[in-house]
Length: 527
Image (tube, rainbow, N blue to C red; front, side, top):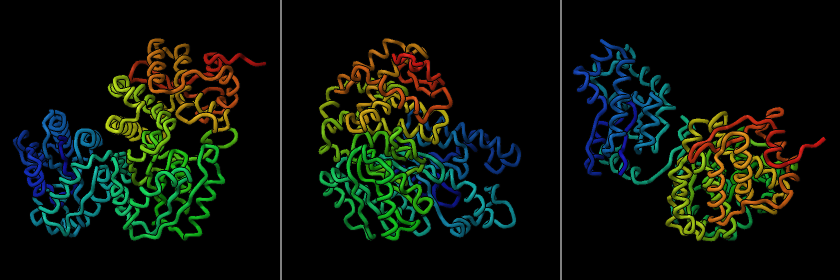
Protein backbone atom coordinates (compact mmCIF):
# COMPACT_ATOMS: atom_id res chain seq x y z
CA UNK A 1 0.00 0.00 0.00
CA UNK A 2 1.28 3.46 -0.91
CA UNK A 3 1.35 6.42 1.41
CA UNK A 4 -1.28 9.15 1.08
CA UNK A 5 -0.35 12.82 1.16
CA UNK A 6 -2.94 15.49 1.91
CA UNK A 7 -1.89 18.82 0.45
CA UNK A 8 -3.60 22.19 0.31
CA UNK A 9 -3.86 25.55 2.00
CA UNK A 10 -4.34 25.94 5.74
CA UNK A 11 -8.01 25.63 6.61
CA UNK A 12 -8.90 23.21 3.83
CA UNK A 13 -9.34 20.36 6.31
CA UNK A 14 -6.11 18.37 6.17
CA UNK A 15 -5.69 18.01 9.94
CA UNK A 16 -9.25 16.79 10.49
CA UNK A 17 -9.47 14.60 7.41
CA UNK A 18 -6.00 13.04 7.74
CA UNK A 19 -6.63 10.99 10.91
CA UNK A 20 -9.93 9.74 9.45
CA UNK A 21 -8.19 8.58 6.27
CA UNK A 22 -5.44 6.92 8.31
CA UNK A 23 -8.00 5.08 10.42
CA UNK A 24 -9.89 3.81 7.37
CA UNK A 25 -6.70 2.62 5.68
CA UNK A 26 -5.13 1.23 8.86
CA UNK A 27 -2.07 3.49 8.51
CA UNK A 28 -0.26 5.83 10.92
CA UNK A 29 -0.85 9.59 10.59
CA UNK A 30 1.78 12.32 10.56
CA UNK A 31 1.34 16.09 10.43
CA UNK A 32 4.55 17.53 8.92
CA UNK A 33 4.16 20.89 10.69
CA UNK A 34 3.92 19.13 14.04
CA UNK A 35 6.94 16.95 13.20
CA UNK A 36 9.02 20.00 12.22
CA UNK A 37 8.06 21.73 15.48
CA UNK A 38 8.89 18.62 17.50
CA UNK A 39 12.34 18.31 15.96
CA UNK A 40 13.14 22.01 16.31
CA UNK A 41 11.75 22.29 19.84
CA UNK A 42 9.92 25.42 18.68
CA UNK A 43 6.50 26.21 17.28
CA UNK A 44 6.16 26.87 13.57
CA UNK A 45 5.57 30.56 14.27
CA UNK A 46 8.71 30.70 16.43
CA UNK A 47 10.83 29.05 13.73
CA UNK A 48 9.62 31.63 11.19
CA UNK A 49 10.25 34.51 13.61
CA UNK A 50 13.68 33.46 14.83
CA UNK A 51 15.14 31.57 11.83
CA UNK A 52 13.08 32.71 8.85
CA UNK A 53 10.98 30.93 6.25
CA UNK A 54 14.00 29.49 4.41
CA UNK A 55 15.18 27.62 7.50
CA UNK A 56 11.66 26.33 8.11
CA UNK A 57 11.40 25.05 4.53
CA UNK A 58 14.70 23.22 4.88
CA UNK A 59 13.45 21.46 8.00
CA UNK A 60 10.17 20.71 6.26
CA UNK A 61 11.95 19.21 3.23
CA UNK A 62 13.99 16.97 5.54
CA UNK A 63 10.85 15.66 7.22
CA UNK A 64 9.07 15.07 3.92
CA UNK A 65 12.04 13.26 2.39
CA UNK A 66 12.63 11.02 5.38
CA UNK A 67 9.00 10.08 5.94
CA UNK A 68 8.26 9.38 2.30
CA UNK A 69 11.31 7.20 1.73
CA UNK A 70 11.61 5.20 4.96
CA UNK A 71 9.49 2.36 3.59
CA UNK A 72 6.61 2.88 6.05
CA UNK A 73 3.24 3.61 4.40
CA UNK A 74 1.42 6.40 6.23
CA UNK A 75 -0.98 9.30 5.78
CA UNK A 76 0.83 12.64 5.82
CA UNK A 77 -0.74 16.05 6.21
CA UNK A 78 1.55 18.55 4.49
CA UNK A 79 1.90 22.10 5.67
CA UNK A 80 0.23 24.58 3.35
CA UNK A 81 3.48 25.58 1.66
CA UNK A 82 5.24 22.22 1.63
CA UNK A 83 4.57 21.58 -2.04
CA UNK A 84 6.11 24.90 -3.05
CA UNK A 85 9.35 22.90 -2.90
CA UNK A 86 9.49 21.11 -6.25
CA UNK A 87 11.73 18.43 -4.76
CA UNK A 88 9.14 17.66 -2.06
CA UNK A 89 6.33 17.80 -4.60
CA UNK A 90 7.90 15.29 -6.98
CA UNK A 91 9.03 13.06 -4.13
CA UNK A 92 5.42 12.92 -2.91
CA UNK A 93 4.15 12.06 -6.39
CA UNK A 94 6.76 9.30 -6.70
CA UNK A 95 6.07 7.72 -3.30
CA UNK A 96 2.44 8.50 -2.46
CA UNK A 97 -1.02 9.30 -3.69
CA UNK A 98 -1.27 13.07 -3.41
CA UNK A 99 -4.71 14.58 -2.83
CA UNK A 100 -5.03 18.36 -2.76
CA UNK A 101 -7.87 19.67 -0.59
CA UNK A 102 -9.35 22.96 -1.76
CA UNK A 103 -11.73 25.57 -0.40
CA UNK A 104 -12.84 29.05 -1.32
CA UNK A 105 -10.85 31.92 0.28
CA UNK A 106 -13.84 32.98 2.38
CA UNK A 107 -14.28 29.42 3.66
CA UNK A 108 -10.61 29.24 4.58
CA UNK A 109 -10.75 32.55 6.45
CA UNK A 110 -13.83 31.45 8.40
CA UNK A 111 -12.06 28.24 9.42
CA UNK A 112 -9.02 30.14 10.71
CA UNK A 113 -10.28 32.44 13.49
CA UNK A 114 -6.90 32.19 15.25
CA UNK A 115 -4.13 32.92 12.77
CA UNK A 116 -1.39 33.50 15.34
CA UNK A 117 0.35 30.28 14.28
CA UNK A 118 0.24 31.20 10.58
CA UNK A 119 3.01 33.73 9.87
CA UNK A 120 2.07 33.98 6.19
CA UNK A 121 -1.33 35.43 7.18
CA UNK A 122 -0.13 37.99 9.70
CA UNK A 123 -0.98 41.07 7.60
CA UNK A 124 -3.92 43.48 7.93
CA UNK A 125 -6.05 41.90 5.16
CA UNK A 126 -5.96 38.09 5.60
CA UNK A 127 -8.58 37.45 2.91
CA UNK A 128 -6.46 39.24 0.32
CA UNK A 129 -3.38 37.38 1.55
CA UNK A 130 -5.17 34.02 1.26
CA UNK A 131 -6.35 34.87 -2.25
CA UNK A 132 -2.88 35.97 -3.33
CA UNK A 133 -1.16 32.90 -1.85
CA UNK A 134 -3.68 30.55 -3.48
CA UNK A 135 -2.91 32.15 -6.84
CA UNK A 136 0.83 31.96 -6.21
CA UNK A 137 0.67 28.29 -5.26
CA UNK A 138 -1.92 27.24 -7.85
CA UNK A 139 0.59 25.42 -10.04
CA UNK A 140 2.10 23.53 -7.10
CA UNK A 141 -1.28 22.51 -5.70
CA UNK A 142 -2.38 21.31 -9.15
CA UNK A 143 0.40 18.70 -9.29
CA UNK A 144 -1.53 15.93 -7.57
CA UNK A 145 -3.48 12.75 -8.19
CA UNK A 146 -6.81 14.37 -7.30
CA UNK A 147 -8.33 17.62 -6.07
CA UNK A 148 -11.27 17.62 -3.66
CA UNK A 149 -13.31 20.67 -2.65
CA UNK A 150 -14.12 20.64 1.08
CA UNK A 151 -16.37 23.74 1.37
CA UNK A 152 -19.68 21.88 1.56
CA UNK A 153 -18.49 18.45 2.67
CA UNK A 154 -18.02 16.99 6.13
CA UNK A 155 -14.62 15.57 7.12
CA UNK A 156 -16.11 12.06 6.90
CA UNK A 157 -17.32 12.68 3.35
CA UNK A 158 -13.93 14.04 2.29
CA UNK A 159 -12.11 11.15 3.96
CA UNK A 160 -14.23 8.62 2.06
CA UNK A 161 -13.37 10.34 -1.23
CA UNK A 162 -9.66 10.42 -0.36
CA UNK A 163 -9.70 6.68 0.36
CA UNK A 164 -11.42 6.09 -2.98
CA UNK A 165 -8.77 8.14 -4.78
CA UNK A 166 -5.96 6.31 -2.97
CA UNK A 167 -7.10 3.06 -4.58
CA UNK A 168 -7.55 4.42 -8.08
CA UNK A 169 -4.01 3.95 -9.29
CA UNK A 170 -3.84 7.10 -11.41
CA UNK A 171 -0.47 8.04 -12.92
CA UNK A 172 0.25 11.78 -12.86
CA UNK A 173 2.00 13.88 -15.49
CA UNK A 174 2.85 16.91 -13.30
CA UNK A 175 2.98 20.11 -15.33
CA UNK A 176 1.69 22.68 -12.82
CA UNK A 177 -1.79 23.84 -13.86
CA UNK A 178 -1.69 21.62 -16.97
CA UNK A 179 -1.21 18.51 -14.83
CA UNK A 180 -3.25 15.50 -15.92
CA UNK A 181 -3.79 11.90 -14.95
CA UNK A 182 -3.37 8.66 -16.85
CA UNK A 183 -5.54 5.74 -15.80
CA UNK A 184 -4.80 2.17 -16.87
CA UNK A 185 -7.85 -0.07 -16.49
CA UNK A 186 -9.21 -3.35 -17.78
CA UNK A 187 -12.74 -3.26 -19.11
CA UNK A 188 -13.93 -0.20 -17.18
CA UNK A 189 -15.79 2.13 -19.59
CA UNK A 190 -17.05 4.22 -16.67
CA UNK A 191 -13.50 5.46 -16.11
CA UNK A 192 -13.51 7.31 -19.42
CA UNK A 193 -17.01 8.59 -18.72
CA UNK A 194 -15.96 9.89 -15.29
CA UNK A 195 -12.92 11.68 -16.71
CA UNK A 196 -15.00 13.35 -19.41
CA UNK A 197 -17.74 14.34 -16.98
CA UNK A 198 -15.18 15.87 -14.60
CA UNK A 199 -14.16 18.32 -17.34
CA UNK A 200 -17.77 19.56 -17.70
CA UNK A 201 -17.50 20.04 -21.47
CA UNK A 202 -19.98 22.23 -23.29
CA UNK A 203 -19.88 19.69 -26.14
CA UNK A 204 -17.85 16.68 -27.21
CA UNK A 205 -16.27 15.83 -30.56
CA UNK A 206 -15.21 12.19 -30.88
CA UNK A 207 -12.42 11.45 -33.39
CA UNK A 208 -11.91 7.84 -34.39
CA UNK A 209 -11.31 5.77 -37.52
CA UNK A 210 -13.37 3.19 -39.36
CA UNK A 211 -11.45 0.16 -38.08
CA UNK A 212 -11.62 1.23 -34.45
CA UNK A 213 -15.31 2.04 -34.79
CA UNK A 214 -16.00 -1.43 -36.12
CA UNK A 215 -13.95 -3.19 -33.43
CA UNK A 216 -14.55 -1.00 -30.36
CA UNK A 217 -17.68 1.00 -31.15
CA UNK A 218 -19.76 -0.77 -28.51
CA UNK A 219 -17.15 -0.03 -25.84
CA UNK A 220 -17.15 3.63 -26.87
CA UNK A 221 -20.94 3.80 -26.70
CA UNK A 222 -20.84 2.27 -23.21
CA UNK A 223 -18.30 4.87 -22.10
CA UNK A 224 -20.37 7.77 -23.41
CA UNK A 225 -23.71 6.48 -22.12
CA UNK A 226 -25.26 8.85 -19.62
CA UNK A 227 -23.09 11.86 -20.46
CA UNK A 228 -25.32 14.89 -20.56
CA UNK A 229 -23.54 16.57 -23.47
CA UNK A 230 -23.99 16.92 -27.24
CA UNK A 231 -21.70 14.51 -29.09
CA UNK A 232 -20.41 14.87 -32.66
CA UNK A 233 -18.57 12.03 -34.40
CA UNK A 234 -15.70 12.23 -36.89
CA UNK A 235 -14.67 8.90 -38.45
CA UNK A 236 -11.40 9.04 -40.39
CA UNK A 237 -9.87 6.62 -42.85
CA UNK A 238 -7.50 4.27 -40.98
CA UNK A 239 -3.76 4.05 -41.42
CA UNK A 240 -0.61 6.18 -41.26
CA UNK A 241 -1.07 7.08 -44.93
CA UNK A 242 -4.09 9.15 -43.85
CA UNK A 243 -2.22 11.07 -41.16
CA UNK A 244 -2.41 14.18 -43.29
CA UNK A 245 -3.61 17.76 -43.28
CA UNK A 246 -6.75 16.58 -45.09
CA UNK A 247 -7.70 14.52 -42.03
CA UNK A 248 -7.03 17.48 -39.74
CA UNK A 249 -9.24 19.59 -42.01
CA UNK A 250 -12.04 17.04 -41.62
CA UNK A 251 -11.84 17.40 -37.84
CA UNK A 252 -11.79 21.20 -38.00
CA UNK A 253 -14.76 21.27 -40.37
CA UNK A 254 -16.82 18.98 -38.15
CA UNK A 255 -15.94 21.03 -35.08
CA UNK A 256 -16.95 24.31 -36.66
CA UNK A 257 -20.16 22.81 -38.05
CA UNK A 258 -21.02 21.53 -34.56
CA UNK A 259 -20.29 25.00 -33.09
CA UNK A 260 -17.63 23.82 -30.65
CA UNK A 261 -16.38 26.47 -28.25
CA UNK A 262 -13.42 26.74 -25.90
CA UNK A 263 -15.24 24.76 -23.20
CA UNK A 264 -15.65 21.84 -25.58
CA UNK A 265 -13.54 18.69 -25.49
CA UNK A 266 -12.16 16.62 -28.36
CA UNK A 267 -11.85 12.90 -27.59
CA UNK A 268 -9.24 10.92 -29.50
CA UNK A 269 -10.48 7.33 -29.53
CA UNK A 270 -8.06 5.15 -31.46
CA UNK A 271 -4.41 4.43 -32.11
CA UNK A 272 -1.47 6.77 -32.42
CA UNK A 273 -2.61 8.27 -35.72
CA UNK A 274 -6.03 9.20 -34.34
CA UNK A 275 -4.50 10.54 -31.14
CA UNK A 276 -1.95 12.71 -32.96
CA UNK A 277 -4.57 14.10 -35.34
CA UNK A 278 -7.12 14.75 -32.59
CA UNK A 279 -4.47 16.44 -30.47
CA UNK A 280 -3.21 18.63 -33.29
CA UNK A 281 -6.73 19.67 -34.28
CA UNK A 282 -7.49 20.49 -30.63
CA UNK A 283 -4.29 22.51 -30.23
CA UNK A 284 -5.15 24.75 -33.19
CA UNK A 285 -8.95 24.92 -33.11
CA UNK A 286 -10.06 28.26 -31.65
CA UNK A 287 -6.40 28.64 -30.60
CA UNK A 288 -6.72 25.65 -28.31
CA UNK A 289 -9.44 23.44 -26.88
CA UNK A 290 -9.08 20.53 -24.49
CA UNK A 291 -8.39 16.98 -25.63
CA UNK A 292 -8.81 13.64 -23.89
CA UNK A 293 -6.93 10.62 -25.19
CA UNK A 294 -8.46 7.15 -25.10
CA UNK A 295 -5.82 4.97 -26.81
CA UNK A 296 -6.96 1.66 -28.26
CA UNK A 297 -3.58 0.24 -29.34
CA UNK A 298 -0.63 -0.81 -27.24
CA UNK A 299 1.65 1.62 -29.03
CA UNK A 300 -0.68 4.54 -28.36
CA UNK A 301 -1.08 3.56 -24.71
CA UNK A 302 2.63 3.51 -23.88
CA UNK A 303 3.76 6.31 -26.17
CA UNK A 304 1.56 8.49 -28.37
CA UNK A 305 -1.22 9.28 -25.86
CA UNK A 306 1.11 10.62 -23.14
CA UNK A 307 3.32 13.67 -23.43
CA UNK A 308 1.39 16.03 -25.68
CA UNK A 309 3.14 15.49 -29.01
CA UNK A 310 0.70 16.01 -31.87
CA UNK A 311 1.03 16.38 -35.62
CA UNK A 312 0.66 14.96 -39.09
CA UNK A 313 2.89 13.71 -41.89
CA UNK A 314 4.11 15.32 -45.07
CA UNK A 315 5.37 13.58 -48.19
CA UNK A 316 8.89 14.55 -47.11
CA UNK A 317 8.65 12.79 -43.76
CA UNK A 318 6.76 11.76 -40.64
CA UNK A 319 5.43 14.27 -38.10
CA UNK A 320 7.12 17.24 -39.75
CA UNK A 321 4.23 19.52 -38.73
CA UNK A 322 3.03 19.40 -35.14
CA UNK A 323 2.58 21.02 -31.76
CA UNK A 324 2.93 20.23 -28.08
CA UNK A 325 -0.58 20.14 -26.60
CA UNK A 326 -1.02 18.16 -23.41
CA UNK A 327 -4.25 16.22 -22.92
CA UNK A 328 -6.56 16.92 -20.02
CA UNK A 329 -6.79 13.18 -19.25
CA UNK A 330 -5.71 9.82 -20.64
CA UNK A 331 -7.62 6.58 -20.13
CA UNK A 332 -5.91 3.40 -21.35
CA UNK A 333 -8.29 0.46 -21.22
CA UNK A 334 -6.42 -2.76 -21.99
CA UNK A 335 -9.72 -4.42 -22.91
CA UNK A 336 -9.33 -2.66 -26.27
CA UNK A 337 -6.31 -4.85 -26.95
CA UNK A 338 -8.46 -7.99 -27.10
CA UNK A 339 -9.61 -7.03 -30.60
CA UNK A 340 -6.31 -5.53 -31.75
CA UNK A 341 -4.73 -7.44 -34.66
CA UNK A 342 -1.76 -9.46 -33.47
CA UNK A 343 0.66 -7.61 -35.72
CA UNK A 344 -0.35 -4.28 -34.19
CA UNK A 345 -0.08 -5.65 -30.64
CA UNK A 346 3.46 -6.86 -31.24
CA UNK A 347 4.42 -3.60 -32.94
CA UNK A 348 3.49 -1.69 -29.79
CA UNK A 349 6.00 -3.67 -27.76
CA UNK A 350 8.84 -1.91 -29.60
CA UNK A 351 8.06 1.32 -27.77
CA UNK A 352 8.12 -0.49 -24.43
CA UNK A 353 11.53 -1.96 -25.28
CA UNK A 354 12.79 1.51 -26.18
CA UNK A 355 11.66 3.04 -22.87
CA UNK A 356 13.19 0.19 -20.90
CA UNK A 357 16.48 0.31 -22.79
CA UNK A 358 17.24 3.95 -21.93
CA UNK A 359 15.14 4.60 -18.80
CA UNK A 360 14.40 1.50 -16.75
CA UNK A 361 16.63 -1.55 -16.40
CA UNK A 362 14.11 -3.28 -14.10
CA UNK A 363 11.43 -2.96 -16.79
CA UNK A 364 13.89 -4.44 -19.29
CA UNK A 365 14.46 -7.46 -17.05
CA UNK A 366 10.68 -7.94 -16.83
CA UNK A 367 10.46 -7.87 -20.62
CA UNK A 368 13.16 -10.49 -20.92
CA UNK A 369 11.54 -12.68 -18.25
CA UNK A 370 8.05 -12.46 -19.77
CA UNK A 371 8.77 -12.10 -23.47
CA UNK A 372 6.77 -15.14 -24.56
CA UNK A 373 3.75 -14.17 -22.42
CA UNK A 374 3.87 -10.65 -23.82
CA UNK A 375 4.12 -12.00 -27.35
CA UNK A 376 1.01 -14.08 -26.64
CA UNK A 377 -0.79 -10.92 -25.47
CA UNK A 378 -1.68 -12.16 -21.98
CA UNK A 379 -3.69 -9.28 -20.40
CA UNK A 380 -2.54 -10.00 -16.83
CA UNK A 381 1.07 -9.63 -17.97
CA UNK A 382 0.48 -6.68 -20.28
CA UNK A 383 -1.30 -4.41 -17.78
CA UNK A 384 1.55 -3.95 -15.26
CA UNK A 385 4.06 -3.60 -18.11
CA UNK A 386 1.91 -0.89 -19.69
CA UNK A 387 1.60 0.92 -16.35
CA UNK A 388 5.35 0.79 -15.78
CA UNK A 389 6.16 2.08 -19.27
CA UNK A 390 3.67 4.95 -18.91
CA UNK A 391 5.09 5.84 -15.49
CA UNK A 392 8.60 6.08 -16.92
CA UNK A 393 7.43 8.26 -19.80
CA UNK A 394 5.48 10.52 -17.43
CA UNK A 395 8.64 11.06 -15.40
CA UNK A 396 10.59 12.01 -18.51
CA UNK A 397 7.89 14.41 -19.71
CA UNK A 398 7.62 16.17 -16.35
CA UNK A 399 11.34 16.97 -16.47
CA UNK A 400 11.52 17.91 -20.15
CA UNK A 401 8.12 18.65 -21.63
CA UNK A 402 9.30 20.14 -24.91
CA UNK A 403 12.21 17.83 -25.66
CA UNK A 404 15.03 20.19 -24.86
CA UNK A 405 17.05 17.52 -23.11
CA UNK A 406 16.30 14.11 -21.61
CA UNK A 407 13.04 13.57 -23.47
CA UNK A 408 14.98 13.29 -26.72
CA UNK A 409 16.12 9.88 -25.44
CA UNK A 410 12.64 8.61 -26.28
CA UNK A 411 13.40 9.23 -29.96
CA UNK A 412 15.77 6.24 -29.93
CA UNK A 413 15.10 4.17 -33.03
CA UNK A 414 12.93 6.85 -34.59
CA UNK A 415 15.47 8.64 -36.79
CA UNK A 416 15.98 5.52 -38.90
CA UNK A 417 12.53 4.15 -38.17
CA UNK A 418 10.68 7.19 -39.51
CA UNK A 419 12.78 7.10 -42.65
CA UNK A 420 11.92 3.44 -43.26
CA UNK A 421 8.23 4.16 -42.64
CA UNK A 422 8.21 7.01 -45.13
CA UNK A 423 10.13 4.92 -47.68
CA UNK A 424 7.30 2.39 -47.64
CA UNK A 425 4.65 5.06 -48.05
CA UNK A 426 3.50 4.45 -44.45
CA UNK A 427 1.74 1.28 -45.58
CA UNK A 428 4.42 -1.43 -45.59
CA UNK A 429 5.61 -1.18 -41.97
CA UNK A 430 3.73 -0.58 -38.77
CA UNK A 431 5.25 2.26 -36.77
CA UNK A 432 6.46 -0.14 -34.07
CA UNK A 433 8.03 -2.44 -36.65
CA UNK A 434 9.93 0.49 -38.11
CA UNK A 435 11.03 1.53 -34.61
CA UNK A 436 12.27 -2.00 -33.91
CA UNK A 437 14.37 -1.89 -37.07
CA UNK A 438 15.56 1.58 -36.12
CA UNK A 439 16.51 0.51 -32.62
CA UNK A 440 18.88 -2.15 -33.86
CA UNK A 441 20.30 0.00 -36.67
CA UNK A 442 20.89 2.97 -34.36
CA UNK A 443 22.39 0.74 -31.65
CA UNK A 444 24.90 -0.55 -34.19
CA UNK A 445 25.64 3.02 -35.25
CA UNK A 446 25.99 3.91 -31.57
CA UNK A 447 28.72 1.32 -31.22
CA UNK A 448 30.83 3.31 -33.70
CA UNK A 449 29.78 6.81 -32.67
CA UNK A 450 29.09 6.87 -28.95
CA UNK A 451 30.25 3.73 -27.17
CA UNK A 452 27.15 1.53 -27.17
CA UNK A 453 28.38 -1.89 -25.96
CA UNK A 454 28.11 -4.50 -28.73
CA UNK A 455 26.78 -6.99 -26.16
CA UNK A 456 23.88 -4.62 -25.44
CA UNK A 457 23.07 -4.36 -29.14
CA UNK A 458 22.94 -8.14 -29.36
CA UNK A 459 20.77 -8.34 -26.26
CA UNK A 460 18.41 -5.79 -27.83
CA UNK A 461 18.20 -7.71 -31.06
CA UNK A 462 17.50 -10.97 -29.23
CA UNK A 463 14.70 -9.45 -27.12
CA UNK A 464 12.99 -7.89 -30.13
CA UNK A 465 13.08 -11.22 -31.96
CA UNK A 466 11.60 -13.01 -28.95
CA UNK A 467 8.78 -10.46 -28.99
CA UNK A 468 8.10 -11.22 -32.65
CA UNK A 469 9.49 -7.98 -34.04
CA UNK A 470 11.73 -7.49 -37.09
CA UNK A 471 15.36 -6.59 -36.55
CA UNK A 472 16.89 -6.55 -40.05
CA UNK A 473 15.56 -4.25 -42.80
CA UNK A 474 15.37 -5.39 -46.39
CA UNK A 475 18.73 -5.18 -48.21
CA UNK A 476 19.42 -1.61 -49.32
CA UNK A 477 16.41 -0.20 -47.42
CA UNK A 478 18.42 2.11 -45.14
CA UNK A 479 20.44 3.42 -48.07
CA UNK A 480 17.23 4.04 -50.02
CA UNK A 481 15.68 5.77 -47.00
CA UNK A 482 18.73 7.95 -46.29
CA UNK A 483 17.39 11.09 -48.04
CA UNK A 484 14.33 10.86 -45.74
CA UNK A 485 16.44 10.10 -42.65
CA UNK A 486 18.59 13.15 -43.40
CA UNK A 487 15.47 15.35 -43.22
CA UNK A 488 14.70 14.20 -39.68
CA UNK A 489 13.14 16.97 -37.60
CA UNK A 490 15.82 16.50 -34.93
CA UNK A 491 18.41 17.75 -37.41
CA UNK A 492 20.27 21.00 -36.76
CA UNK A 493 22.26 22.05 -39.80
CA UNK A 494 24.59 19.21 -40.70
CA UNK A 495 24.14 17.41 -37.37
CA UNK A 496 21.37 15.29 -35.87
CA UNK A 497 20.49 14.63 -32.23
CA UNK A 498 20.93 10.87 -31.96
CA UNK A 499 19.85 9.02 -28.79
CA UNK A 500 22.22 6.20 -27.88
CA UNK A 501 22.19 3.53 -25.18
CA UNK A 502 25.32 3.61 -23.03
CA UNK A 503 24.32 0.78 -20.71
CA UNK A 504 21.10 -0.99 -19.77
CA UNK A 505 18.56 1.55 -18.51
CA UNK A 506 20.74 4.54 -19.34
CA UNK A 507 21.23 6.60 -22.47
CA UNK A 508 22.49 9.91 -23.77
CA UNK A 509 21.78 12.18 -26.72
CA UNK A 510 24.77 12.79 -28.98
CA UNK A 511 25.06 15.48 -31.64
CA UNK A 512 26.28 13.49 -34.61
CA UNK A 513 27.35 14.78 -38.04
CA UNK A 514 24.95 13.42 -40.65
CA UNK A 515 27.90 12.19 -42.69
CA UNK A 516 29.20 10.18 -39.72
CA UNK A 517 25.75 8.72 -39.12
CA UNK A 518 25.44 7.73 -42.76
CA UNK A 519 28.76 5.91 -42.65
CA UNK A 520 27.88 4.21 -39.35
CA UNK A 521 24.61 3.00 -40.90
CA UNK A 522 26.47 1.59 -43.87
CA UNK A 523 25.26 4.22 -46.32
CA UNK A 524 28.05 4.83 -48.85
CA UNK A 525 29.19 8.45 -49.32
CA UNK A 526 27.87 10.29 -52.36
CA UNK A 527 29.46 12.81 -54.67
